[in-house]
Amino acid sequence: MPHATFSSPDLDAFCGLDGLGLTATGQRIETGQAVLECRVLADDQWCHRCGQAGVPRGTVLRTIVHVPLGWRPTMLQVRVRRYRCPDCCTVWRQDTTAAAASRTKLSRDAVFWALKSVVIDRMSIARVAENLGTAWHTVNDAVLEAGSELLINDPARFEGVRVLGVDEHVWSHTRGGNKYVTVIIDLTPVRDGTGASRLLDMVPGRSKKVLKTWLDQQEQGFRDRIETVAMDGFTGFKTAAAEEIPQAVAVMDPFHVVALAGDALDRCRQRIQQTTCGHRGRSGDPLYGIRRVLRTGADLLTDRQCGRLSSVFAADEHAAVEATWGIYQRIVQAYRNPDRVAAKQQLTAVIQDLAGNVPASLTEVITLGRTLKRRAGDVLAYFDRPGTSNGPTEAINGRLEHLRGTALGFRNLAHYILRSLLDTGGFRPLLHRQMR
View 1 (cartoon, rainbow, N blue to C red):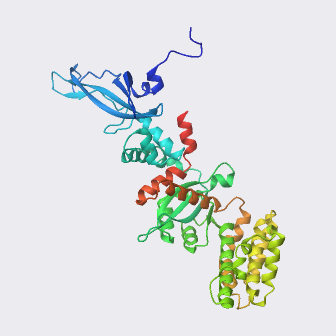
View 2 (view 1 turned 135 degrees about the vertical axis):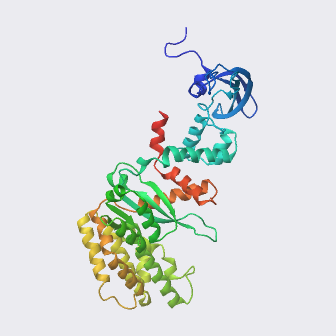
View 3 (view 1 turned 180 degrees about the vertical axis):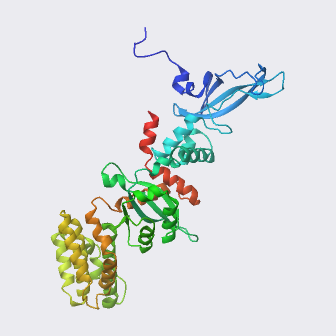
């Protein structure tokens, strides 16, 4: 007697055929695949035009790619019965749309399995196609169509968005054409501490017009809900946001502020290197040897690194580098201060000092000061809105780079945008719920 928690073996249930309106009548195990012979459960013998009982007119085979079973690609050979109406001469076949959409090769379960493999398991289309035993284009078209219908085109995807992140992204590293896109990220889960950021959209180009047009295309309710926009130092993004969502507060996140200071430090070091040595940095040059140490936070320096810095800064010709390094460290320390009020005061003091009488020899510091003074409101707004940072946006950029590597590059931007949305659009929890 079988155990009470088990039922009799059922090939239809095991292979998921009962949910497709099919039943297995035979099987064949081949070297590279498994083949299940099936028939349609629904009778469907009545004429679709007049309702008269049809006369059988033979059968046709429809081959459908199914979910891999037993480490083998699995094919369904469905015997579809044909009928002819004796009154109106209409000819029809049994309906197999429950198993697979019309004029498609993948079963509905196989489409969902492929979508799950791409979105959740982060497999490439090539690997999914190999596991299914079918062509790349067949799988790609099915995944993009199902992903767009079930996930991307869902109107609820934009609900609850209150914090946006905006940044540029290089999607193609080949010469010619526009290689930049603007990525729009939902940072609301990060701000609320409820989850990770997610990609909302990707728009070709990087300009004020690109972001302004995208915001203008959204519903008014969506624009009214936006409270904060995290961005880098590009003025075009700030202007577009100010015109389309004036109630939103622009925040220039710490990553880009520190990057601006670090770039100023690098330019100063390179300028002094050329002035003192007459060439670019080489092994053995004092400034070239400490190029990475200069970018390390002062509280993280080892005794040996401190000694190297002191040795280089002892030379009078390196005074400009030391002064610029000091500004860089003050900015870093302000962001590392756990007291947000005190940190804001520290960074405010830095901006005010750079807006004063800076020696003309510190050209990089002067340029940095002008930028920070112009964007002071955005820079300091970070301390009033904890959790608002473009760091998660940079993280998504990194995931998009990984996607391009997995796919060995993309040539079609529209395809890249769809794949990027499926990969980083935050659909994994939704698919997990649908799988239960």
